[in-house]
Image (tube, rainbow, N blue to C red; front, side, top):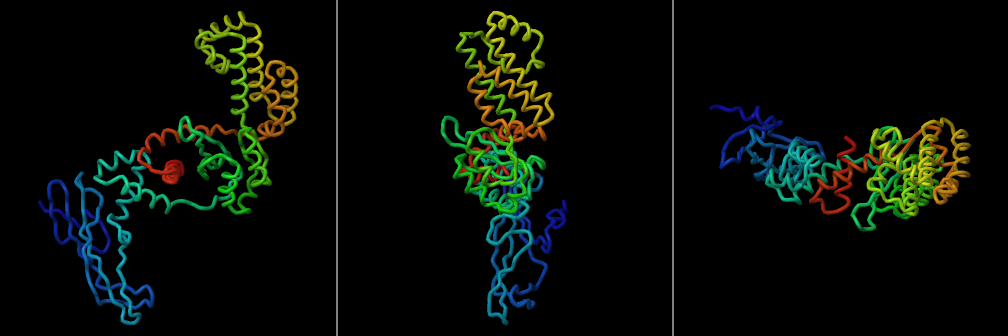
Length: 384
């Protein structure tokens, strides 16, 4: 059966002059159609070939069969410059054992698969897959942010059981990852974020963070024109944590109770409502604590202005502080930043969702050998 390999291959300025299939692998020998090149220095047309070497280059598979191209790499001599010029081909990088489109295919696959899986299916070593991916990712990476106005900072633990953190920075309007920073200490964040020009950082109008003092200090110094907004989910986490501590102090240990206490009232199923009602009647102090937790939630749902929320929260601090001493103190200390939320209702919900996805990506990224490689994969997966 006659096959038009030129049409099947679809590469510019080449023709297939020989075809060979060994086992399941296809080898195609190419010839270049152009007889001359232009000198990149003096722009003279060069037709004097000094030498030709053939390189074996991996290309996209054909009908599931691995394909290798025997590509002539020609060296021309420029008589005017008295220099030897290596010909550049549009479909492959200089001194690379694969075509650009094969690299792009590997890059796209690494977004969704593990290196181990790709290595096995493509017959490549881990380091080969990693090098190809890193090159493509670096080509697409943007060094400078595109003037975001609302950003969010959040952290998550990189290694379970270790004090090893990663901080993510997200553009809340464009829903893209701006930066992935190794560490969460002030000096680590300052060093990374100062890479952005003053003009870019000065355009940021709002920064959503949790109440860790390091994030606040960094945000105030590096984003001088931005309002600090304390994330509502972090506030609720603090309340729920103290509610759980109160439950333990009161000696209430019914199975499944922590989950019922944390769950939003309207999200409880009928049987869960009945179960919780019975327990809270038996332990009225815990019932009061739960009602105070729900009141905070109602403040977040019903308040629409800074001042309105401030009045309600100050009242809650006076009453709720009897039970929630730690939470009330924390809210009082950070009240302006907490109330800033009610101006535009931005939260870290997006970034926390991204952090959940990041953990999934990490599990798929077995084979990446350092933080920078993981960072590049995260950019590739999120900023499509």
